[in-house]
Length: 238
Image (cartoon, rainbow, N blue to C red; front, side, top):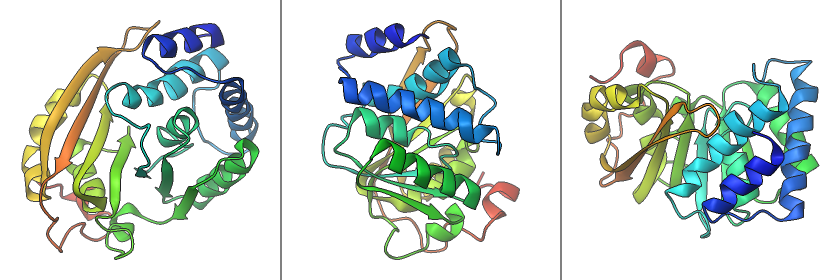
């Protein structure tokens, strides 16, 4: 996906980018590739692939949810900032908190945010299991996002404790999303969530399948969740 295709495809979805926003994506790409030479941030470094598989793919969350409002968004295990930072560029009003377990990635994100001159972005070095138990963060976010972090049963335990009642957990998945969703139904319900909407589509150019699930937080998450670091992955709720 070249820059022109990126602009046109987003415009078709009602997202019009300013010259400043386009420059921010360009700077994001350049900074990502520069830092990637020193640390492993992404296997995808070709410009057209980054624009398609990282930037555009991240922004697809905004096709099915109104990010134009003032929202507190938490991104769990964002890695090099996906999906929350491409969303932040497209929808500058949102306040973004990224939690990631690797301090080197946090350093990259802090540097990137300065380069992009982003406001209302916070980067926290922590395990999601520990972070989800902190009173100042637990059940305090309008939206919690995650992309390619873990299977749904595990991801629900990491994300739903952070979503406030009435808020939404947006899970971004690939072709296996429906199987994961079925396997994660017990966990979602136990943690206070309910599937509200699901969206299936193909990514332009390469035609790969994508699934986005909106899981609404209906009731508080039981206090015992999330469990200790590593436990959700080793013994998922099933």
